[in-house]
Amino acid sequence: MDAFLNTLLEILKYTLPSLIMLMVTYMIVSKFLTEQTTRKQLALFHETQNITIPMRLQAYERLTLYVERITPRNLLSRVYQKDMNVAVYHAMLTETIKSEFEHNLAQQIYVSRGVWETIRSVKEQEINIINTFAQRLDPEAPAKELHKLILEYVLTDEGEQPTEVALAIITDESRRVLTHGPQA
View (cartoon, rainbow, N blue to C red):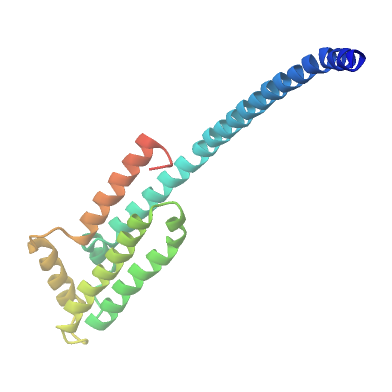
């Protein structure tokens, strides 16, 4: 029995320190690999951030431009021609809003769902305003009458115009992106 115990103690004398070293080495290597992975993820995040923030800001710029272009004050004078009648002017106004919207469809992947829904809502509201006033007039009447009705409405309406609300929402979100990064 003494020989067996001596042999066992002799084996433990060599294997126990080896096992302890193996465990310590495993823990050190594991911690090192975890830290390296974290560093690489952080570096990738910063690299991605340097790409996504400018793209998101460009999307906000394009959507701001879209909203400004469909604002009645800008849209009416840009589309109006003296020889048009109400029907043609109405069709050109709504077509301009829709085509500009389609031109900016890709921007939705860079902005929040709330901003995109606001843009879609503004498009519909502006078309509804135009439709409402166009229906009040004879389609063969001069376009000047529709132009005048819509412009009077815009100038006398006491509430916020849909485009003003949209611009405020776009501005707020773009400021959050600038301040807090792409997570905003």
